[in-house]
Length: 299
Image 1 (cartoon, rainbow, N blue to C red):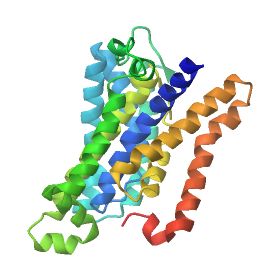
Image 2 (image 1 turned 90 degrees about the vertical axis):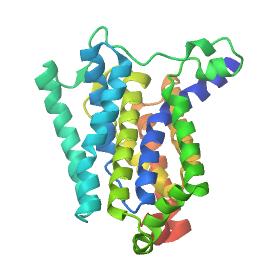
Image 3 (image 1 turned 180 degrees about the vertical axis):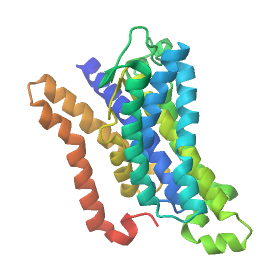
C-alpha cells in the first residue's frame, strides 16, 4: 500500500512538472506587465524541438538545449511585438499558438515523413535519477524522475524569493505595477519586458522537453493538449506569485494522475481525460468570484 501511495506522489510530480515550467514563464511575464497566453504554443514547439534535437544528435541533453534555445527564439515574436511595438499580447499569443500547431505538424511530415505521432526506435529520453532508488521516500518519489522535475520546483522558489528580496527583482515587479515610475528611475521598461518574455520562452522549452522526453519518449501532434492553458489558469489562481505556483500545479497534476488511476479501475477515458480541464474551469470561476476581474487578471 505504501509503495502505491509513493507511486501516486511520483505520478503527480511527473504530471505537474511541464505545467509548472510554463506557469513560471507566465508568472514572470505577468510580473513585467505582459499577459502571456502563448504558453501552449511555446510548450508544443519545445516538445517538437526536443524530440527532433534528440533524434538527430542522439543525445537527450542536446535535445533539451535545442528546445530551450529554439523556444526562446520562438518567443521573440511575442516579446518584441508586445514590449517594443506595444501590440496586443493576446492577439500575438493566439497567432503564435496557431503557428506552433501548424508548424510542428508540417515539420513532422517534412522532416520525418510521418503524421500524427513520431516515435522512432532509439529515441533517447532524459535519464532518470536512478541513483536515488535505494533511498527511503526519495527513491520511490524521485528515483524514476528526470532532473528537470525537482529543478522546476527549485526555480519557482528561487524566482519567488528573488522577486521579493532583491533589488533587481523589486525593479522587475515595479515595471508591471507602475511602468512610468520605473522608467522615471532609469529602468528600460521595454528591454526588461523583452528579455523576461524571452526567458519565459526558454522555460516553456524546458516544459516541452520534459513532456516529450521525460514524461514520455514520443512526439504527437498537439501533444500539449491544453496544458499551456492550465498553466495560464495556475498563474491567475496565484495572482502571478511564483512561490505559490507549485501548490496550484500540483493540484492539476493530482487531477491528471487520479484520472489515470480511474482509467485503471475501468472509468471511461473521455471522463478521466476531462478531469484536469474541468478543475481548470472551476478554478477560473472561483478566482473570478473571489477576487473579481481586476485582481484575477494580470495587468
